[in-house]
Length: 148
Image 1 (spheres, rainbow, N blue to C red):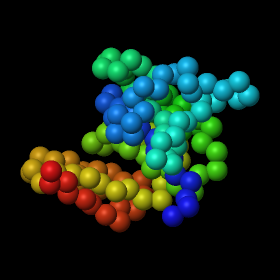
Image 2 (tube, rainbow, N blue to C red; image 1 turned 45 degrees about the vertical axis):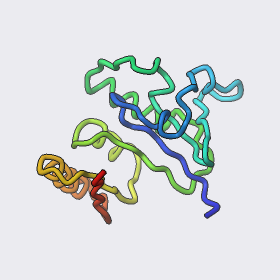
Image 3 (cartoon, one colour; image 1 turned 60 degrees about the vertical axis):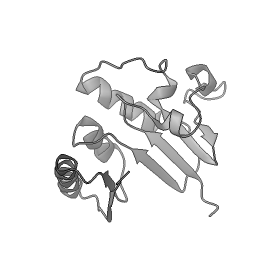
C-alpha cells in the first residue's frame, strides 16, 4: 500500500521478530551508524525492524528486572533511527507487565490488537490486556484468536 512500516519487537525476554522476518543473522554490529548515535533498523519484506534479538546471541537468556526492561524499551523506541514511518507496529509479550506500561507511557498509541488462543487461560489473559489498554486510554478495536 506504499506505507513506511516499522516493526518493533518489544518482547525483551523472548524476541521472535528476527526469526519471523528472516533476519536472525543480523548482529549488533550491523545496526550501528557512523553518522548518528542511534541504532539503525534493518529491513526485510519492506518492513523496518528492531529487536533485542539483534543485540544478543540467539538462544541467550536475558535476566533482567523491571527497571532494566523499561530502559531497554525506551532505547528501542527512542534510540533507533526509525526515519519517517507511517506506522510502527509494536509486538509485545503476553500479559500486562512492564513492557506494556512502558510503551503506553512513552509513546501515544493509536490502538492495540490483542492476539490470543482459544484456551481459557489465554482468553483470561487477553481480557486483562484489553482492560489494561482501556485504562491507559488506548483503543482496542480488535481481538484476534489464533486457532493454529
